[in-house]
Image (cartoon, rainbow over all chains, first blue to last red; front, side, top):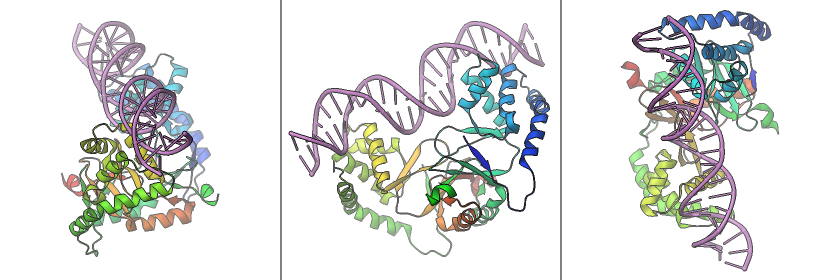
Length: 168
Length: 168
DNA sequence: GTGAATGCAAACTATTTGCATGATC
DNA sequence: GATCATGCAAATAGTTTGCATTCAC
């Protein structure tokens, strides 16, 4: 899944620098997550470490499907079962470490929880655009005030047509 | 799937009256749709008529899954195959007569295209709330101006927590 | 009578579950 | 050594496809 990150116009953070920093923190983050797992009575196993390693590759900025994760994990540990990946993903999600997002049709994608963004998916070219969650603030408060509905974060993508496909 | 329709506060239309009117128009609407199908080189068959009949029951205000439709259609024509229902739904969607919506996880739901609304789904009680598409106008124009992205109508529901589940 | 649509079965994708084995605490 | 996690296989849900037959035009 190809992803483009779009910054809010006023933002001045360099995403490349952020990625490098994340990558250097990677090992530490894996241990930190596994510590949380252990604190909840879970166990620190090789498959779980490998799954986190793949999830954190590139600083966790990817949207990986379960299939992607299975392939990535098997490059490290060839005998890992699909069901192990699914069960681990569910466990990590229950722990609040990761989330899954539905990018239109097709399989769920997984990534770290930390970022506050939303997804736009182009239904013509399948490109994913990330936008700051702040764009949703107006809608969220309107839905809350008018309907009492609390919009939950980034679980489903918004589908539409991207700029490139619009001009075609 | 249980659905609640919420009107914009200033609106004064009686939804019950609208449903009765729709129901009386039902037969005429089926013929009208089938006329469109025929105009496009399609054929008017008994399964298609039955599928439209089920879709239009209750004025087309339901969110029916493919499974719901198969069950409903088989009450009229017991031998209709699932694949026929799926193929007909795809054909009708290509014609612009119906749309499918993803209400959170689980199967797609289908309904007539005519209405301009969006769906909110409570991730705790699965209740569906319909809101006027106008609520999205601000977000849509912001996404268009800032990212060149044209939000497409009502294809995916917004997930969150409804008022009732919030106070629990 | 020709081609679109159907019914049936089988394939397919994404995910979940049962259960014996194995590894971690 | 108790029990959590794994691997494997089979089951499941939702949907799609291949193909011979049927039916609308």
